[in-house]
Image (cartoon, rainbow, N blue to C red; front, side, top):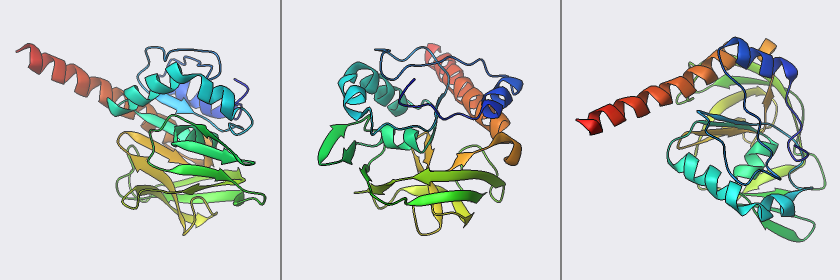
Length: 213
């Protein structure tokens, strides 16, 4: 949709090659989240559409409920901003999904711009620690009012990310980073993301079977 326009075509192709069936969501117009096994929210300019995104309350609540139920969610840059509690820009504030316990504020100067080399840290939801990923960042925003105990998925060998040499907030079954990864420079990313979704499906099926006795 107009708010989230940045997806490398190669990333979508890699997900399909890894076995995913893609279902597209319009965050501005769709009033409910379709039945999906994982959610990928790419980059874009949510600040430009923040009031429209905020006004679509039913979708925001659907995504929040799905996240709290354990739906795997992978988000990059604009997606991270959308999953925060709120976005502040030009003296205005708009409520976002509220999955991540943090806020986002827009800045005049870029907070990160250029190529990124990231190393997966312990606790990454679908990549082995030490895996090297490559991508880029370009964001005029920063995370503020962040809960102090939030862990991060990446140690940055190059790039700014969240600051302090880290990127990739991890909370519940959510991974949200400022880094835009590219599948060709991030071996195993697509396969790992699809496996993460499948693992969650298998856990849900097992729980249902156990509950049925």
